[in-house]
Amino acid sequence: MPVVDDLSRGRSGVYRRALAGRDFRLLWIGSSLSLVGDGMTFVALTWIVLSQPGGTRQLGLLTVCYTLPVFVGGLLAGPVLDRFDKRHVLAVDSVVRGLAMASVPVAAWAGEVPAALPFVVAAVYGLFKMVPLAGFPAAIPDLVVPEHRDAANALESLSFSVAGMIGPALGGLLIGVAGGEAVLAFDALTYAVLAVTALCVRRPLKPDAGDVRRSLDPDAGDVRRSLDPDAPASRRPPRTGASVARRSAGRLRGTSGGVLVLLRDPVLVATTAAFMAFNVAMGMLLVAGPWLAKNELSGGPNALGLVLAAMAAGELAGAAAAGARQPRGRPVVAIAVVQLVAATGFLAVTFAPHTAAVAVGYLVIGLFSAPMTVWAQSLRMARIPAPLRGRGFAILRTLMQATPPLGAACVTPLLDAGRLLPAALAMALAAALPAVALLTYGLRTRG
Image 1 (cartoon, rainbow, N blue to C red):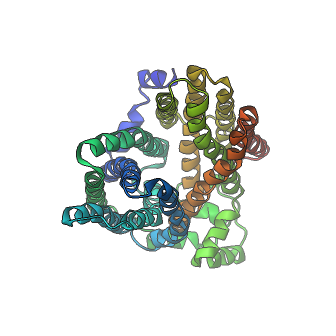
Image 2: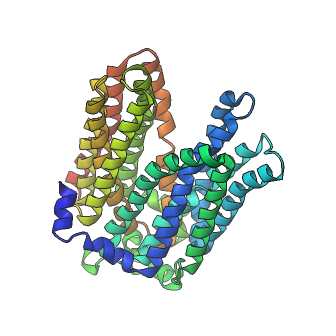
Image 3: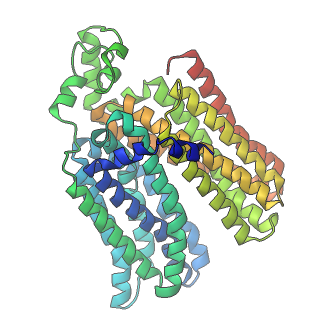
């Protein structure tokens, strides 16, 4: 296995070197613990809502409250992260969401939880969700040297995978023992830990005057390259004169102008579009998995747990391998290739009712989608100007978060009619065709 080979050759040392940095280690630990708490939260909120009269009918509203504010919050989080020190923004976010979570157990201990409170808590969570999702990766370039960024990004991906496995399971266990309110109290505690670890980071996480001067240097030529302090001078484009830099500088001063600078980078646009399409397929799979467990696979909920565990195991292995081994050649080509391989995993749903065969497909999806995330994030860190990293990661991640509901809506009519093969083909094509386009682009350019 690639991960075993990497470990035997000592490549795992890159993880130790990334975690050797005190500031990154602190922020990663706090973020990882908070993610576990987040994995417990939705389970707890759904249980509390289900316990209310007419709770089943309210689950759809809870899901909307949990997800819809993410898009508004994503547009607001970027400018805030770029303007203020990310340590302070992450701490304030943690305090606000921690207080929101704590309001439910406090209300329960005081007497009774108001029927509307879980929906308010879900909306607050969704509104602020993009702050750490954009803030942590935007901080990594300031905390980790360039050669360790793949490892740092892999560690973030590993945190998501582990939290995705541990959080819901632990939340369900604690609900049975102490109730949903106690789970939210625990989540509030994890937010407090993240706030403390963020404030304990010593290095300021705000672009300094040197970053801005470099970004506005009239002799810098292509502003996107000049803003990357880690780009070797030999790889920077030739100077094109002060007029280009002045126009680029003007674009950087405004929020919308800064986003336009990012949208003019064809590599960022191409990779983001490919990820958005892949997430359409993942949205389809979110519906297809439970449908298969109910109608096709033997074992019902146990079968669903097995295939989801297979995907999580693949994500863990894929992220670990990607962090230990940088892509050979052009990153855009490597991203496109692993996305193409991951796309084949969606076809495995046609092997139902054979649960093991379907689980292998889920494993392939997880194993090859994780390197996409790790390598693409390192690529973005190299190409997004330092003064725009907060806005850049916020807008890109918001766009990618927006597409799974589209996939879920598209595949539902097919599954409702029992048309599993067309649904499988739709998932595979949604993931594969943009990867082919990205591969073609990568081979024709030097991206």
